[in-house]
Each structure stands twice: as structure tokens, then as C-alpha cells.
Image (cartoon, rainbow, N blue to C red; front, side, top):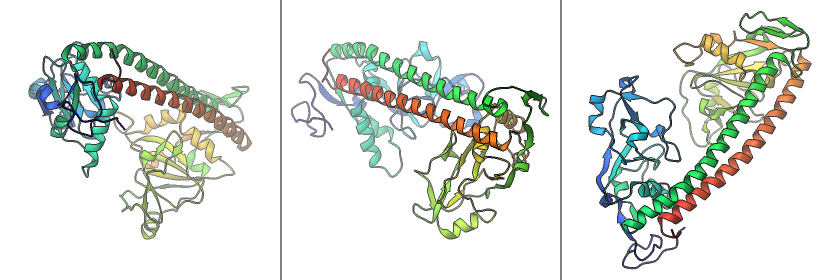
Length: 436
């Protein structure tokens, strides 16, 4: 992966080549505080305000801080883990190796959780250079190697402290970090813009789905007031009908965890494997035949059945593939439509409409959309066009979804190339390959 050599500055033959006036130094020797673990505080102790409490999930891939859903703790509890300007955090579990540099002016008072490890650079060490090093391919390689030596996906703080860092002369270190950052920021901005375009294309599809399952493809030509006061008008030849009157079968999955294996008779699917109308079986566990039969004692799933998640999260759905043995995990509903009345793909799209989401909110228990009780699903009110019109709507929406997927595939490819360019630039800079 890296060109290597051995000389007075590089006694480890697994390390890449660096300039002669650079040297390899273990991370702990560059810091006044090394491998300092954060606080182990239960979520029940989180507050509405106070000191922001940083967790591994609060740090994004680019080393930024997520602004969504911040949590706070009592300042007195935070005393031993208050961050100081230019402190560096590294995730030791979950998203292992993800890093963050704290800025007092930018981030305000913050403390950090136990799955993050703090390093405080010495005054002579440019913290931004270390931050950039943590974003390099070289650091990623060390994290991957350290993780591979553990049976669980984590790297201890002491292991991070032993990681070698390529260290240029002090003045050159500052020149590199100052020169590199604007280039990195420019790439990050391009990635941000690409993600915005992707989000907008998905948002457009969601609006299109909602409008189409309430108004039809051509909009409201002749309309009537719906039987739902909050919905408004629908096409005059449509009706509102409860889901249970459009289906042959609506069955809740067994509310228990089935024993699984890596190889078996059939797949066990979980709520996390269903997203945006699609089912991902690539990492699905499997079950033996006896477990398959026991967990499907209420109803055996068939190809073409709709699966709906009623918790964690609410409102995801997919169509089961043909010729696969499927067992449902907890918190899912198996729905078999009456094909004379309801197109299964029409129902799939409807589950993602604003009309559906409004009812999830109405029927959900808790302050947020937490879960739907089993009796709520059969009693969802759906818009029901004539059966032939449902087929046209399905054909139209499948086409629109394919267009959106094609756009997002191009965007994802572009983002991947930008990320590779960014990491290559950082790696070449912090190892001295690129001159400043």
C-alpha cells in the first residue's frame, strides 16, 4: 500500500517513506494528555441544556460535528471531561477511528462520552496537522490493522497512543496544515453540494409519491371531498377504504428473537434491512428449517407480500422477492393484498406518502413517532383508485423512482471520487510526498 524504506528516521519497515528531515513519533509523545477516556453517563441523565455531551454518533466522516439531536449534561457532571481548545477526540468503538478537533469559539462548552478518547497536543504540535493526519489513508490503515487484532470492533485508547505519526519540522508542520486546509475545505464543499442535490432528488420523489396517491397522475380533474376531514379532496372515482378491507391477510410477526445462523434454510430479516421501499438481504442472518416453521406458524411469507415496519423505525416497507424462504423479525407486519382490489406496489408507495405519515403520527404512542400498535395498521385509511388506475400509477412511480435512483448513483459515484481525492491529498501532504 505504501512505499517503504529503512533508515535512521524509519526503523520500522512497515512504515512508508518520509522526507529525511521528518521523523516518526508515537502519538502519545506529541501530547500532554494521551488516551483520556470520556464519561460513562446514561441517556436518562441527559438534559435540555447545559454542557453539550459529545458521542461517537455526533462526529461525521469529515471530522465535523453533527448539529442534529444534540444532548446535554449537568455542568457539574462534566467537570472531568470538559474539552479545551484544540483537543482531539478519536472514536474507539462503533465508527472506530472517526476523529474531531474541538474549537472553543465554534463549538461552545463540550464534554465527551466514554467511547471517545481525548488527546491534547503539546504547544509545539499543530493540532490541525494531527487532525489532518487522522483523516489520512495511513491512519485508516493503522486503525484497520489494530481492529483486526481484536475479536470485537474497537481500538483502545492505549493502542491509538502507540500509533506512529510522521512529524515534519515545527515550522513546516504549520505550513502544511495552513496550506492543506483550504484545499480540503473546497473538496468538502463540493461533497456537501452533491449531498444536497441527492437530498433534493429524494425529496422531489417523496412529494411526487404523496401527490400521486392522493390526486392521481394527471391531478384533480373531477374531485370530491374525502371522508377524512384532514385530507381534503380526492378524485371523484376514488374512495377511502381501511387497509384491512383491501387485504387477504395482515399478520404481526412473532414478538421474540429467533435463533439465527450464518447458513441455513431461510433468511431472517430485520427492520434495519428495509429502507426506502427496498429489502437488503446482503447481511441477513439465516435460520434453520425448524426455526423457519416455528416462527412462521401464524403465516408463511410469500413472494409479493408487503412487509411493513411498525417500530424502529415506523413506516418502512418492501415487497418480498419470489423464491426465497423468509422469516420476519420483531416489530414487522406481513401484508398480503387482495389483488383484485389493491396492487401491492401501489400499497408500497402509499406507505411512503404524507397521508400515511400523518396517520402514523396520529396513531403513534409517545412524544415522537415511536411505534404503532398492531391494531392500528389494519385500520389505516388509504386512498383507493380503480384497480386499473392503480396499475398506471405504479408504472409511473416505478419509472420516477428509477430516474431518481440513476441520479443518485451518479451523485454517489461523484462523492466517492471526491472523498478519494480528499484522502489522497491529505495522505500525500501529511507524509511529505506533496511539497508546500
